[in-house]
Length: 138
Image (cartoon, rainbow, N blue to C red; front, side):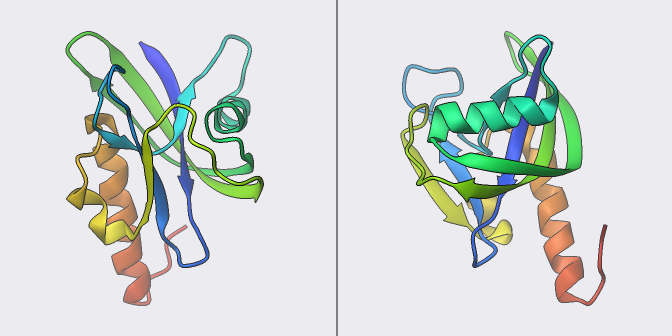
């Protein structure tokens, strides 16, 4: 089991950042929420801060945990934890992905997303629909 963190990063238009895995990597061509593996003696929050600095050259503040899921791929399994995350500084420079996009929650399913990320998309779409209908979720 690989333990992984993922950031739900939003811009000023409330769009969410996704990035595409490049050719030659596991899950090449799939889009995902940015993040990465938790290293030994590292908290999930520390992992997410480190991974986003290494992979995108941004400094972030990790907020509350939004959810988690476990997914079994053909050759490995992941335990994925999702966190609200805010960019504090830096301009995004892709080092581990070949593309990125800021997208509205309701359009996330228009992208071929990594299967482990799919449960989080449902949560994000449900949250947006509830907020638009005046229901506030914590």
